[in-house]
Image 1: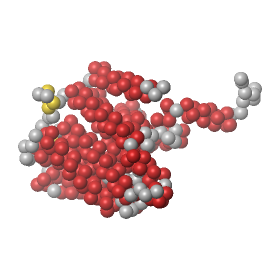
Image 2: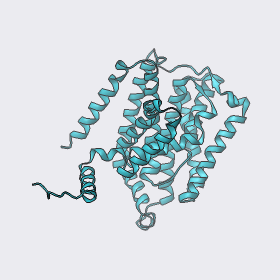
Image 3: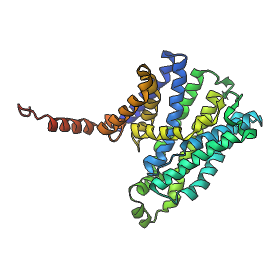
Image 4: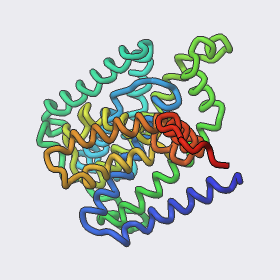
Length: 326
């Protein structure tokens, strides 16, 4: 039984790897967007799902790394891989510094503070013309290459991004099962009790916040080298809200749920293309319906207790006049 999750994950990864062979053009680009979003949402799962911190600055950390990688490879002519390492290090340091300050706040105050951080990032990126190019953005970002193979097509980049997603998901699972992961969840469940057992609560929160920012940074770098263009609009606060919606829809506290939510919310606009201007209304109703029927998100579809609960609810609303069957 213990092998089943690994078997299912391997089958899902195999099917995902074969996906580009069945689609083409815009479909491949959409698949890349879903994979990059999944990496970002796994990072947000550390912050919100495990540590219980409401952060609306995830897109800002994604943008910091994306812009840093873009600036280093275009203006400074750095090797893309070195630029990625430098961008991730800078993002982690910034997240650690801001986390030490902002994580003194709790609940809605923290949410508003992180929202302000994201808005501030967008304003800086839009007005620092000499460095970021302002609202015109930065173009001319070179393509990544791996072992002499240029990742300049949608298919090749998808396979690379999918491998990165698989490795980061595996790492996230190891962290969840480690002492650090248990500390995150202890702080989420009862901060006072965690402090009384000797856990350094602030340090644990900052660690979760920084780890989430690093995952967002990886997603930002992949975004920059995939689109090969970055602009402030790509990382505004609405994207942070979408990432949070992806996690809630997929199932907070679950790595698979984070991936399901990212893929589902990314593909949903295409599935609802036929409703035209009513897209936002239908999208909102669908999300609300999911949260009512599946409070733990899409991941609860894999739990048998979900179906038993739904059957009990149905039998309570519509009594069976013929009695229960054996």
